Image (tube, rainbow over all chains, first blue to last red; front, side, top):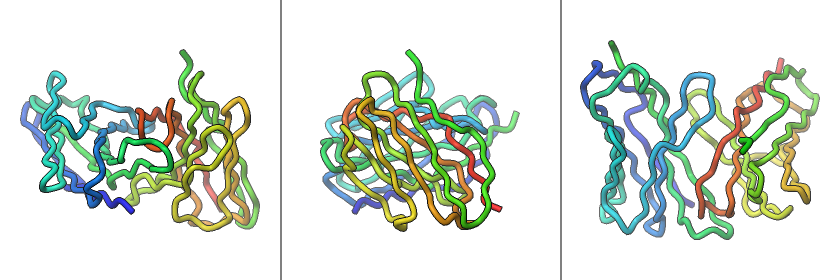
Length: 114
Length: 114
């Protein structure tokens, strides 16, 4: 089955700096890669996703890049703010429905230091 | 539109007991999946139901079971509870099964086994 590795497990940055979280996946058939943010005591929420027909997607200060050849994708947060402090999960799936499933990474705890 | 609703939010059980957790998906969503979240283990997939049928199952012992009703509401049951079952149990719903569509999480049920 699919295996998703995520690193680093913890990341501390100064407010205003950039943060990068990287994930690798094992199944070359995976083509849907969502990212979730989970604030302390709250539910994970989708912040951005990318499908395999694009290499990069941006939404304000957040961007995700995908390298299908290397089977890795990354989350980039620019101009970090204290409210970006949370646990971030990457995930991968074939996106084809049916009997597939979404496989999550282990999570990255991001701390933005004011 | 109401989000994914889970009950109960918090519960304490004794080893050997059994527990049932409930999940009401977003209206119109027919897929419900369950995850176990523990520190350092990320989001571990338990199972997914779509139209009352189990579509996929994670690597958990048979003590973990679930079901889905005709109104798409779902329950999961854990029998013969062990201390290691203490975790946050997250339910998620989506329009389509198998990772073909965005999944939305509930707030979770915090289970403590003593």
